[in-house]
Image (cartoon, rainbow, N blue to C red):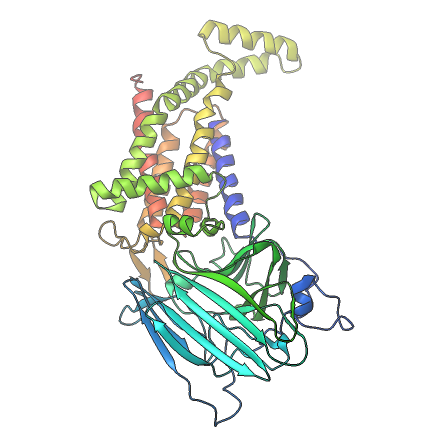
Length: 548
């Protein structure tokens, strides 16, 4: 039963991984934003009033219409944490680099750039096409900088005055306030849509790249660059547009460790739209409000808070609006948070995250040792009784009652509780949430990014590679191989009540399955499971010798 249950754990974890990767898609695609009701039914207020998404904005945006208009101005803003550049064309963000994080996959290890704007496009643009004066996402704004923490972009067209104000806050947050004053003779209306272009980037940080919307207490994610498939299965890049109307706390683009999120000041009235332009390559994210009307001489403003930085739990918590949900925590979020904190605290003492993982694994095994010892002793007693149990089954093959009575007499004689098999499985149940919590802590903790352990293991957040087989482009990963070998040794040492043929099959099946499954996992997670297996081998040897 121990091996069957262990198989169940493996299969449960495989289901967990596949379920995490899977993104549910609705079959009927929503109509494009701004399509008249006669052409297609409106989808909430955003679909009625919002401007058309720019079909090529993430790749290439048109220049201002007239050559006589003012030339583009670039305004650079630097702090201890970021290096940003804004453009007067559209009054938008052209670049946002994180100075505390480098990208080793790029020549020269430049700072991580969180904007993916493509050729000519910009982030945090406000098309405002529903005002009836054209697309303003690339219109030439006038710019002023009254102080180092404030940028103001203004534009006047056909009696309308648009003012965009960027206010820099502490850390990685800014505020964007969009104001429209109607100086024309007629009423106008707008949804104040703000856009964020998403473009595939060749970088290790962008292997998993998705748009996400947190609405009604749930996180909806749409892959632009899908993560590596597990055994050939995976979600793939999203290829259908999605509109989420009302109760949008935030919407943004994220990788495993970094997040660009737009937080509307009135979530209840906010909506978000994800539009894949070239599935797997480019997409557009739009965030806006319900359509509001401006009478002549009237004015109206909307405000967004924008977070552009690392997925550090403390920073995300300080921003609020459930922004911390961008960090995957799995089925046991409290355990994931605890292990993330414990990793950081242990690292502060030992100064090596690999050593910290080993120490935490030892502590976990020590805490579970009494229960594990109980299970191991139970399995050992049951394996001793197995030949006599088989004799009873052969003696009463067709009489269940006599077979049961003989079994109970045997249990009583040997002093074995017949329920011990079930209670012996309790440590397995306890290990599963610990494993899942540790899995998500190791997968999502930005503290592990680019953290070395020893020798060839130079990044605990990525699969390790000792060398690559020439011609096959197949990496040889020592940790998963050693882990599989250790599982073979553990199963050989563990007493079994299984049929010998079944035992031989499980001796091969379980290690192979886990080795294949762990081959694409972060080396920190494989290190944890390998060390845990070695400690389990040691405890099993003591149990077999009658010392526990």
